[in-house]
Structures are given as C-alpha cells and as structure tokens.
Length: 294
Image (tube, rainbow, N blue to C red; front, side, top):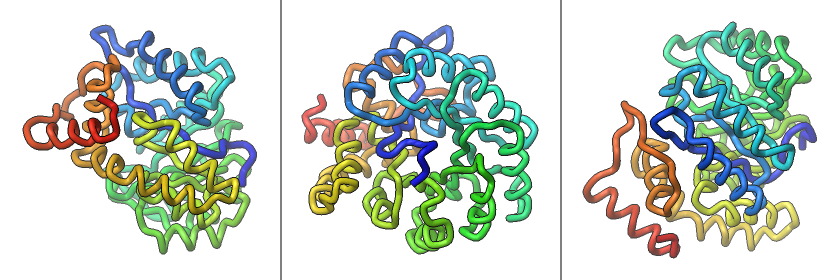
C-alpha cells in the first residue's frame, strides 16, 4: 500500500458540458454525490472526461472546479498525461499548484516510444513536480504497453507512487505486483478486473461504473479489504452486467448516455464521439431498468 494515494474506489469522472464549456453546477452535484457515496477519489480529465476534446482552459476549469468543490473532503486526481513530455511536466506542476492530490499520467500515444523512452518520459515528469504520480497503462487506446520491468524501475522514484493498469492482462499485472510489492498503489483500470487485482495486492480501482453505482463499487473494495472475500466476489458478479453495458461502445459514450438517462445534466458528447442509437441504446436502457436506475 502507498499512503500518499487513496485506498478504495476512485471514480473516472465524466465531464459535464454546457454551451459555455464545463457545467460547474452539475460538477458540484457530482462531487457531493460521490462524497455521500463514500467514493475515495475523483479523477478529473482522465479518459472518461474527454480531455482530448477539451481546450487547455476547459481542462484547467474542470480540474480547479473539482478541487474547489471537493474542499479537501475527497482526493482529486488530475489527468495531465500527453505525448509531449515537456507539456505533461508543465501540466503536472500546474495541477500541484492548483491543489490536486495526485496526477494520472497516461503513456505517450501516436508518437509511441521504446521502454527506455517511457523511463525517460516519466522520470522527467516526476522530477518536475513534487506530487504523487499514477502511471496509466492502457495499450488498447495508446498502442503502447508498459512492461512490468519498466514500471518497476520507475517506481523507485519517490514521486511515482501508483499504476492504473488497464491492459486486462492478469499475467502481466501479476508480474508487476511481484516486482513492485507494497511500495506502489496498484489500481485496476478496468471494472471487470477489480477483484483479481485486489487479490494481487491492489489498493483499489479507478472506475467508470462508479459514475452509475458509486456505493456498490466502493463497497466491493471495502469488503475485500475487511476480509470479506465472498461478499466482494458477489458484488463483482452483481456489477458484471453493468460493467459490460458501459463498454458496449467506446468509453465514455455509454456511461455519459446512462448518466443523462438517470437525469444528470451531462451535456452532449463531443465529436468524434457520437450518440448511442438503435439497438445498443435500447440494450443500455434495459440494463439500467434491471438495476432500477430509470
């Protein structure tokens, strides 16, 4: 366990948009909702937040508004990763200045690098600011996979404190846990692998599903940490259909659609993301009805 970072559920927040940019009124509602649900951290401008479709000013507004609304009652983790090392380092410093508790830094994408390049990229970012860094490995999106040996070297840096592992490769995650032990916070980056990652010594999950069922996702982690493995397993099974429904199209299309169907003022998706239609939309509605959410 790493005590600089949260234990439990961190919600990968969807960004509420309005005509002028970020809908701060709805954002405040979401913050209060997660505090009430017991969620341990909020990730602002991660993948689910559509940061690649936001201007720098909008990203700053989203992060700073989340920090202000949280008021120290829940950790706020800012997404600051990009393929430009100097920009990622600058944004990481700024997030620390604004009061973020930690940052989430995705591996470079498009201009993919070698494993040595990953070491130099993250070391430069970690040297630039005294703030806990969670490395984000999601090869299905970036086309680049960070190997366990690479992260093990990076984790020797005092500011590289955690890993959001979204490869879905349990063998790889097992090796990462073996190499790093308790000096890092290991988080499942996929809702359907939360329990297996906890069993490997994970510290929690960074969850899309927590936008819909926050109490249940947090409770699943809490039960495991308290020794109730059976209860945690049953909750993983209970959440399974919802987890799959929220990945039925590219994230965050289904989760943002679901939140709007539940009455939350999330605004439209931004292109190139498009609205759900037809059979997929009806299937999502059916799952929400099954969980008594609409």
